[in-house]
Length: 99
Figure 1 (cartoon, rainbow, N blue to C red):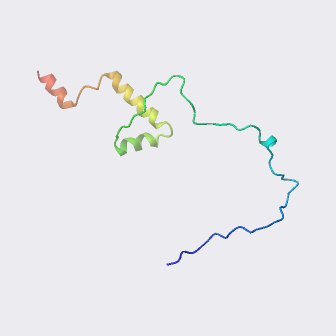
Figure 2: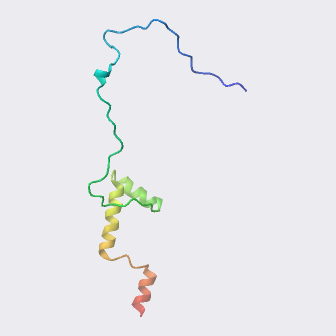
Figure 3: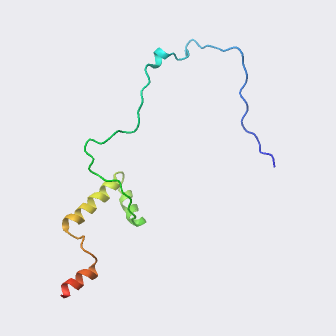
């Protein structure tokens, strides 16, 4: 089965038309080349790049509140850490209370 060609080859013209209102760019007009590669190193890197799996409804909840959802998740996890709620599940807490 033959594929249909939708692009037309460019027209060959020997005479170049120079527009006085839009001249071709020269090296002086462009200036020296400037290289940008990313945003560079952080002045004080305080965060660690990691991967975490969260439930879809949790992500949807934080994303629905607008941009910056990753920072809000980070703040919520900090609050849990500060309250000291990082100790096991409720079943483990019941076993400790029964002792």
